[in-house]
Length: 119
Length: 112
Image (cartoon, rainbow over all chains, first blue to last red; front, side, top):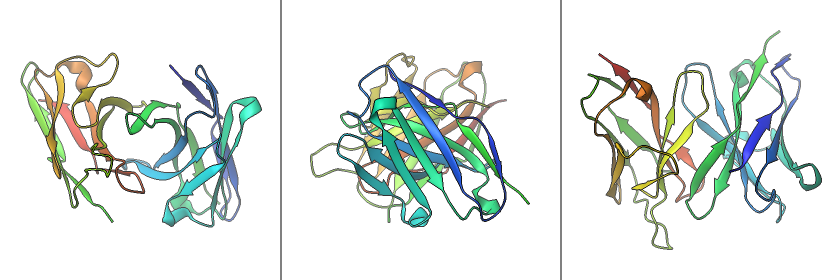
């Protein structure tokens, strides 16, 4: 089973940018898509976007269009999520997750990365 | 856009008793390929979500058989036949039939 390990917690100023990484082990990276999901404190799950590394295809939720960029480095088996123009409402746990097309859902999740936006 | 509505939002259950969570979609979740991409995830306190059920009723690897999923079209249900202490957490339904993938608002399962 694929295991996903994310980068550590970040504290950022409003208006700045953050990058969160997600390194995969097990399985063949790139043959599946990686989604990013966030969870604000005490709130539910919100889908941010995904990448299919082998195809270079990226999809974003409309809410984040223009502020989020998802990329992948196949040689490093790592996906990245960049979020810019940060505001306090972006304070959340950001998860990466592996998508299984056959099951039509996410079957492995990273441990989460806490991004705190505060002046 | 699709809206997923879970009920109840909170479910106090006695250990050993059954529990049931409903997920209702504002639109049919039947995909053009004939599959219904409705899954259930469990999030224990302080943990990332964990897949329990996919395509309505298929248990993921390692998931105890006390968990079951059912439903069709727009109405879906997750049932726990006998609640155990480790089942405490928040349960989410998720649809991936239409873009973008969407989660229900979550149902908090707690022990009475």
